[in-house]
Image 1: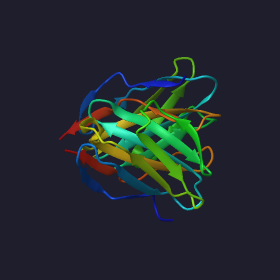
Image 2 (image 1 turned 90 degrees about the horizontal axis):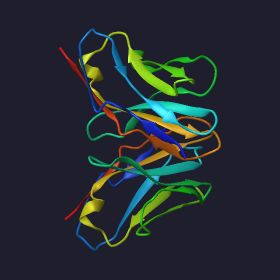
Image 3 (image 1 turned 90 degrees about the vertical axis):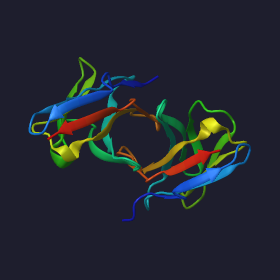
Length: 111
Length: 113
């Protein structure tokens, strides 16, 4: 089975722009979660999608949004980028009461 | 609300010595507990999990963890550390009915030759 695939791996954006990150889960996994990882804040939960519905949401501003498609692929969008949004964005998929499998992440740099 | 604490930012051990990375948690009801490892510029890799059953859980690369319900702890252990074990380790908890996992802040393990 292929693992969790995140694209792109690296991204450089300018303040005020928007960005879309993509995550393809492991085949058969219906749950996809997104996390933001920064040196100062650690691993922060953004949101979780299950069967195209947002099931859980972290404490992030509305500039952060996501969606999930019928094939379980998920996208995360950040609008009006700020310097503080620079981070490693991780996607994880799972099915049922199992461990989550993480992608390699997308390194977003906002300049 | 669920939470995880990893009280040590950094753990240093000599190669060949036993290692322990500590984790305590707070959650309603019976939890699912996990340990993950992260190497530089990589995603998190699953090491082991506690779902139910035996309190001592064995995982990948010789790691094990002991679930202690009374102390709400899930410490990661390895009898003999390797230099290649040097990495960032995360403990995570998930309530059984919740989809959201909460991660600790991570502990950097450094194993010196």
